[in-house]
Length: 155
Image 1 (cartoon, helix red, strand yellow):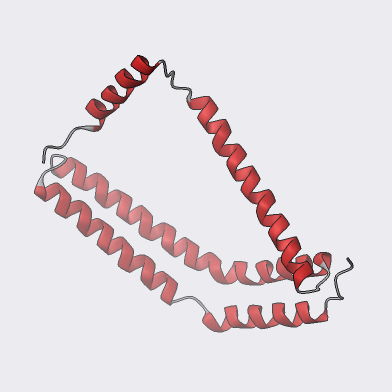
Image 2: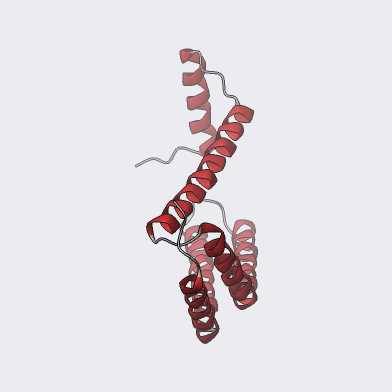
C-alpha cells in the first residue's frame, strides 16, 4: 500500500472541491464549531436541571453542592493535571527529537515516536494512580451529604 503525503492528499481535496464549486471557509467552520460547543453546554445545563427535577432536588441547592464539590476536588486534581502536563511536555520534546534524528515515515522514526508515546502513557497512568483517593472520597461523601439536605424541587 502506497502512502500519500498530507500535502498531496490535501491538493487532491482542494482540486475536487474546486471542481464541485466548493470554497473552503475556515472562519465559517470555526463559527460552526463554537456554535456546536455552545449548544452542548446549554444541553448539558438543561440535562442537569431535568435530572435534579427527576430526583426531586432543588436545582439551586444542587448547583451549590456541585460547586462545593468542584472546589473540594480542584486542589486534589491540580497536582495530577500538572503531572500529566509534564508527561505530555516530555513526550512532545521526545517527538521533536525523533523528527530531528530520523526521516518521517521510516521504521526508525515510527519506533522513536511509538517509544515516546508509550513512555508518556505510562507516565500519565502513574500520575493518575497517585491521586489522593481518600481526599476524592471525602469530597464525594460531603457532596452526597449536601444533596440529601437540599429541599425538594418545586414544580
